[in-house]
Image (cartoon, one colour):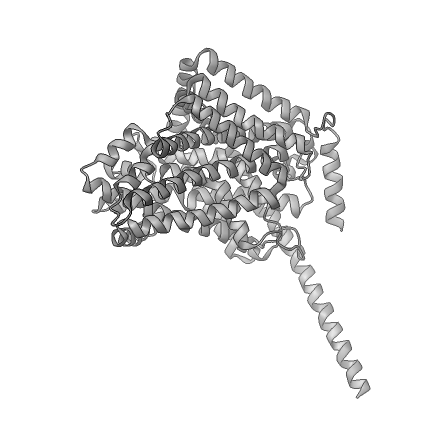
Length: 550
């Protein structure tokens, strides 16, 4: 009750500044600040896209060249802190208090966090990335077998490191919101050092950065996703691959996402996420069965063993040579995951009340990572096998047109019966999966951006949710119209650049989190001890009464 009263007081401090007219309830500084940045970027790209690309690439190059050590060391530190919190005595701390109960079932919970975390990315890169690594021979996970090295490196980019980042930020957001009575917003994490200033300009600046990173990150992912959808429809129905088709697809899918947003998390996002995971399992099992099954299973085992065996060495590897591989791949990914983390972290925090820290961390760190390893082995292993069988034809497709690689792989499968029918079914299923992941990313992203701009409110007005859902689709459409893939590339580079300040923010946040959890552990332990003592007294009193009666 005390924590609930504190949360109400804290929220009122922040929400008193909200603009509450025309069906809106949002912080004007955060909303307008983020909106102005989006407009400035769009105008810059519209009037001089080539110059914008050059500037963002220069900034990104400086960041990758001079701060690669920060991304590598901080992301490895985050994994270590997560493991410490989970498997030390602090792992017994429950998010939301001793008596808090989970809002969602385990299956629904896993489905939502996987769909929001990297659904479109795995669909887009599962075929292409392992082929690149087999061709380029990266300096990490060195092995005599290039196939194992390629997949182990791909595991590195999609496994414990991104999910360690997500686990840390989502735990911090959930803990400070549900245990400390603060609004569910990125600014709340800094209450231990900023105190009441989080309700003013400092907090607004933190949330503006989070909103911009979310909007730009989502727009980039949705733009990439719609290119793959267009490629799938081209394979299935001969639909032209063009910007206008992609714009129409974004408009259509944004409309579906808007309906999901209106329905809320329980009816919309949860329902679609559960469908996603079921389709993922069917699609993956189909490729495993129809593809080189034995090769996939052996490659999965060998690659996973190599990944786990060389994990520490590769996690702290920092290139001292002139090679640009690490900047183009590992640092690029780490910067992307860190810049993407406010969105994913906020969404996971929103759905994770009632879990213990041990349950929370182990579920987020290990379950999605293991599923990613299996998925990448099935599709990446099949891609490598087919590429070797057909003298590099599939890799040529990846280099020329990455979005079509998944559908090209389906065409190369050696199917004994009903080849045409099965290939069409698989292509349709793959296209539906990309669309479904597109929708869940858009609707969960809309809920997160709406949550941040409203000052941590979980029940903001429906028109406001619709506004942010449409805004994400509109940004992606504008960029496609301005410059297609080149504009998306400029936006992606800009998003990665936000990874640097977020890496510093997350490092500071990790330190604050550990200290705060230690204090809460003592309080929850005292509550549990008192409850246990009271039960013992009650049991003892009942026993005395029974003895007296007898």
